[in-house]
Image (cartoon, rainbow, N blue to C red):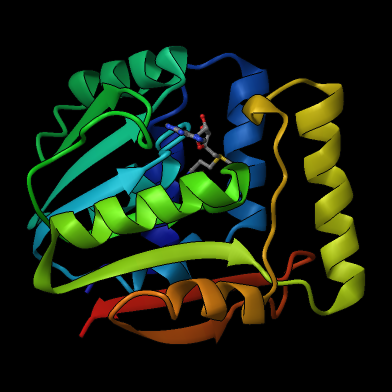
Amino acid sequence: MRKAADLKKETLSLFKLLPWQKRLYVVLRFLTCPFQEIAEFVPDSGTVLDLGSGMGIFSFYLSKKYPGLSIKSFDYNQSRIAVCTEIALKNSISNLSFSAGNIVSQDFADSADCILLNDVFYQLSLADKKKIIEKCLEKLNSNGYLIIKEVAKKPLIKYWFCYFQEVFVAKVLGLNQGLVNILSVSEMLDLLGQYKVSVSVTLLDRGYFYPHIVYSIKKR
Ligand SMILES: C[S@@+](CC[C@H](N)C(=O)[O-])C[C@H]1O[C@@H](n2cnc3c(N)ncnc32)[C@H](O)[C@@H]1O
C-alpha cells in the first residue's frame, strides 16, 4: 500500500509546470480538503466519474492511489480541462481522461462503479441537485456508490467561515455561476430520502477549518 504522504507529494509534483498562483491554489486545496480521507470511500478498481473535477487534483490523486481504476473527469471550465489533459499527457497517465461539459445538462458516461461530486453539489440549484442525483443513480452500477462531499452547517463557526469564503468567491470574484446553496444534513437526508437509496454520513472536519462531510450513497 502506497503511503498517503508519498501520493500527495507525487500528485503535487504533477502541477510543477503551472504558474505559481495556480500551484499555490493546488497546495492550499490539498491543505484544506481531506482528499486522503475521501479516497477511502472510492473502490480500487472499476470506473469512477469525477464530476466537477476542477483542477483535477483529486482525480490525479486517485489515479496514483488506485492504478486499477479507470477515471473519467468532467468540468465545464474548459481551461481547467485543457490544463489537466496536458498534465495527464505529459506524465503518461493513462487511467485518467478529462472532458469539458456541463454535468447537469450533458451526458457524461454510460455506467460507473463510483461517481464523485467533490465540493460541487453546493454550486447547483435545488432543481439541478435533483437532476444530477437522478442522472447519477441511473448511471451507477448496482453495487456502486455515489459519493457527495459537501460541508455541513455545524459547527456553526466552521460553517460561517466556509460560507463567507464561498460567497466571496461566487459573488465578488464572479466564479461558480454565483451560487452557494449549502444544505444541512437533515435537508440532504430529506432530499436523498426521495430516492431508493441507503445513505451513510461521515463528518471529516477534525483538523480542518471547514465542516467537511461525506454522504456515501448506495442504490437499494
Ligand atoms: C469547488 S470546485 C471543486 C473541484 C474539485 N472537485 C476539487 O475537489 O478540487 C467546483 C468545480 O465544479 C465545477 N462545476 C460546477 N457546476 C458544474 C456543472 N454544472 N458542470 C460541470 N462542472 C461544474 C466548477 O467549474 C468547479 O471547477
